[in-house]
Length: 260
Image 1 (cartoon, rainbow, N blue to C red):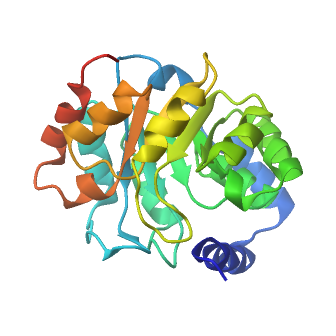
Image 2: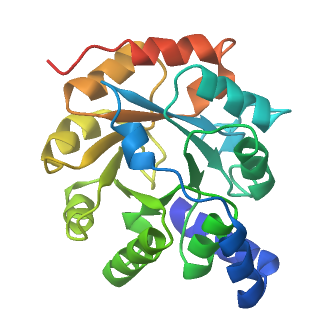
């Protein structure tokens, strides 16, 4: 079983434990605040930052205690991040919907629910908790799921970040006409990071689609590398939660030059 398969198995078990009835879920969706426009937020400057609240990872283990997800999210927003991402997967990343809620209560910018979305329920749950943007990982879904889940999310008012790792996945992603595609430089089988994925895949994303570089962003040089190959935004988690001054690191990222 691959790392991805193992994570998805756990996500399904946790969903079953957490699941509420359909009527209650629909009520929560109706009461949720209107989704904020993540596409507009990511289109507003030379290089945008999606700043992530991330406690742990399968490759590195515990990253940061994060006693107050709300304070960290507020720091991100005040420092110029365009979107705040919160990992909600419980087992490998030690996240939770409670972390997401805590952040949602104190910031006004769009929020990404970062998880392994493998069911319609998880999409509806995301909207019920106020998500503005969700992640769909091409490697975790078949073609029908990819299209149906994207349609469901947009129908609920959310935006979708479609994540790819190679050319075959990029071709599948493009087939559903997404507005945002993320290139993840981390190999889901080995968990190693190869920034060559940015050089190879970012230029292949069609014009008019927002390009996000994910994983391996620890310095301005990393961000500039991705920017040079077409990244409109970067998603940063580990470097920010481990930084002594995450606000300064975000400002560093934002100072990257336009594409060469």
